Image 1 (tube, one colour):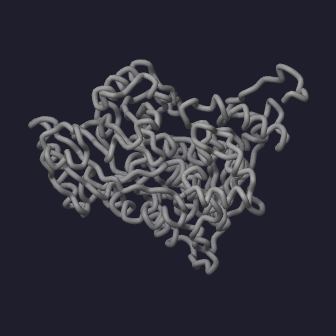
Image 2: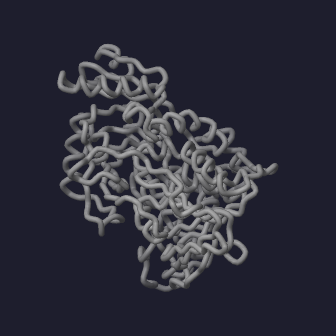
Image 3: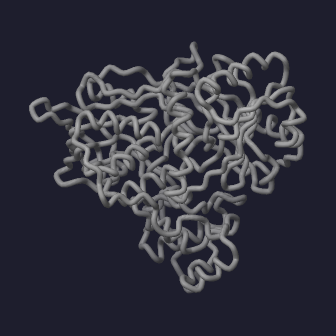
Length: 504
């Protein structure tokens, strides 16, 4: 959707978790807001390809934006998740020193946490750690109870759909190709290709332009003629473990990171949905591979070995899927470590540039949104809306998680809740329908997957994909060439093998 004549007060480039958080925050005001996203749905990049951890703030140098916004964002998460009906679990984190060599790094994190105002920290010996996580190794651990877990794609979708409810236009499959500043009119003119319409050119105008393009933020800044830094992509690979292991990990367990490590080290992470993740690795990749999300055999082998070391009871059948995500780093391979977030209005008035928003970008996203709002206030008159809707409407949880009595009531009111489409995750036909008919108009199987959790179970879609594709064909008029798993050329079918018959 586009605004009248493609003209907005604010245009946001990029619909990751930060871009969507900014859109929701600005939708509290009487502004016309548009979001341009080249993918066919929100959060298809880095925002859905991470550990889903709500970080406490111990990992970042005091006084940096990363530290300040992480702690602030952490404190905002419970309220936001309550409003958006997005699950969050405050399970805490143990950062563990396995030997004397790790102690200086552990004490450094403790000191940073104290300086950053991280609440409730404790240093625990092994006996105390055992009470939190039986069987844990290590000589000393730093306990941070404010750490937690969240669904990264769930939060991103919730932010976007709530922003849309409050009037924000989401222009999916719109790739930005050029940016000019019209000095006479004091506006930005943005040229974009509508990838859903054969690349047809569209033009958007904005008084304020916000660059939240993640891995491509440096490219967007160059289009605008603004001097920004360079982004280096750093891939993190993961294994997903079967829900059979749900409950075996009570808390987040991290190693003590080295001073120049590009990430926080390989670890086990429970998810809000009951799986456990092993990862992530951290490997810089060539610039041309920024959006290459392959999982590599070498890393997968090392993750298997690490997982079986940390959880000796793991069986080969417990490894049900792998995936990867690419961090938008501002530090090159020869430097490593992490640079601070870049969040600034540039020398081009009204162009707000965000770059290097890697971890803890997810945790920081609501606080980043507030900071960006403060910059926008210097350019535009900001009048609060009286009809802002803070809460996400309708049922957006998982039907299978409800008590039996509640499920029966819902089936009585809507019989499609009684028909299971995804057997592994217990996803019903009504939940699939709601995902298909999502407010943003996203039209891929990945969009259904992220909203309903279909295809995420042990069989990875073996049972439900045929039922979903049949539903799309028979009830929504999809032809074989319409089916896409995600964006680009990820088409699923080339034609029909046999004619439809009475037996189908």
